[in-house]
Length: 294
Figure (cartoon, rainbow, N blue to C red):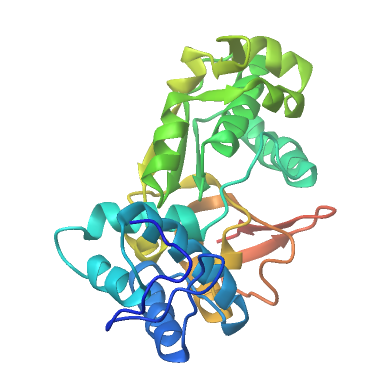
């Protein structure tokens, strides 16, 4: 049932406050923070308590749960766990993204990573970690396909996008976007890879879509991802959801999936003072990237 102002306090949770909000006490916050970190690796600092409350309330309205304790029990019950966790994550993470986001990192891929691919003349596989609704994965696919076309070769390439959110992955697989997103795509790519679908939407052309696949992955389980010898791992605006120690663990695990010479691209400022015996920093303006050097 929807939250309403003045709803009576239940025996299992706090009172509904004016304006339809729920107050969360310290015990509840600690329980939720521990649960989120243990199940999905998501770190919620105390100063983000209001953010947590907002995300939980949105999903509670959809499920009819009346308070945090009731919803907590629902999440911990086997009958609802898998689907409910996926839907909750949608409310606790930001899925706002765009094509060719962060121009400097995109330029690094073009000028550093793809330059190496041209020299090697081999196949290429890239991984978009935390791909949300797919724009990043398709952006990488456009860059790589254009590179292969310039070489006049039939090199095989593939891009894999992973995310914990099933609704976001469903959107990504459909590859249909609002026309306003075309403004983020340069003219030649727009002509080659984007097809009008209606007065308000366009879709990614089928041949490029064949090169991109999507799969659900919880970063808590990143070490078990089925990858090896990757040329590029692109992971931006994702580590901000994790505390520092967990960030270090994640990038250590990501580095293991790269081939020698493969590049890991992170968001500038997301990770400070990381060192790895097999990784060297790539010097490129306004970026944070590392190359596997062993």
